[in-house]
Length: 398
Figure 1 (cartoon, one colour):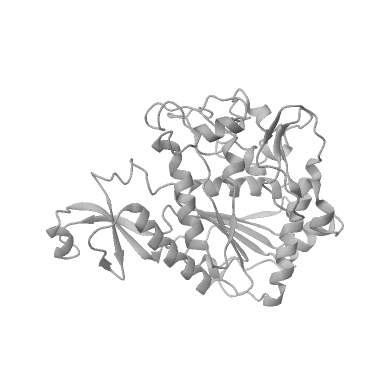
Figure 2 (cartoon, rainbow, N blue to C red; figure 1 turned 30 degrees about the vertical axis):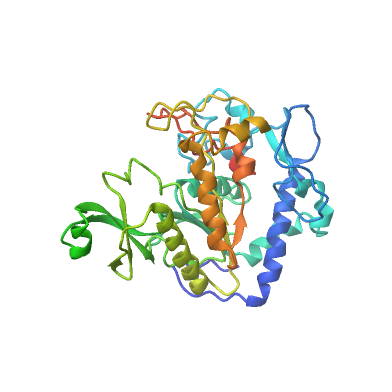
């Protein structure tokens, strides 16, 4: 194929390929599980969800199983420099780093490979790359975590890589041999936000006593990704981790003030109501501006596993094995504490906003809840334990 033009712009892709593209993506997922095998080599099984008789490919329908035969893939050595030091748990000598990758998910895809698709295994990646020329991750650092994991895996197929950093994209890479581009677009809230001070927008908010807060434009996509829907064939979004971040948006010292069409929403609304407005506008924006054949995903929340306090309160994630099912229920119970429950609450907002849209929900929450062992913690010399992002290699491979 000809080298791809590394700028945002129109690209011809027949709308009729959408159905085929969906099948190819599913096939690729099936292929990934095939290479893992399905030999249950240990009695250490952690159920993700109960077995179902459905013939559909449900990647959450399985168990975490410890497999001592799994070795660290070469893509996570010095050849993949894009991994942050704090995420490369093996290079940073995290005590259980090698064991993290030995827990594999034996899901419905691997057990029902023939039902998923009958194509020969080696045809799948070739055809998939031919259909999908570009994939974009749009969101916060949790999406970058997944983006880097994918990049390191793809780099093993081709080392002819050109770094791609257009205006707006945090970083991206084109695999020249396959004319395949993947990019990460950094955004914390999806929409444009910044400091607001009294006097800049008139009297309504001033009269209510607001002086210096954060202005959130619910209908204005952040410039880092505004052009991404018209460029990428696949888009994977995430949002939610910043909405209740006390270090940034303190509800007392620096609350969020929401603006729609340049006018403040009054009376001011709570962050959860603001999130609903943002999701409604951004789903509409993406659907309106995406390519006709684009495949849209919205990823559910990635769980945090802080224990004994939040990230800035001495919290840590000392576990060396996945949580047991009963431990998951307790850890993320609504009756437990505010630190963990926000994830499931945000998911409720996501499901509500995406209902009836063309987005596919990529539900990674429950299968990730078990993996309290797979965070970087203090790897890489962090000042605070990182119990939010994931070690690479690790859970993001699945």
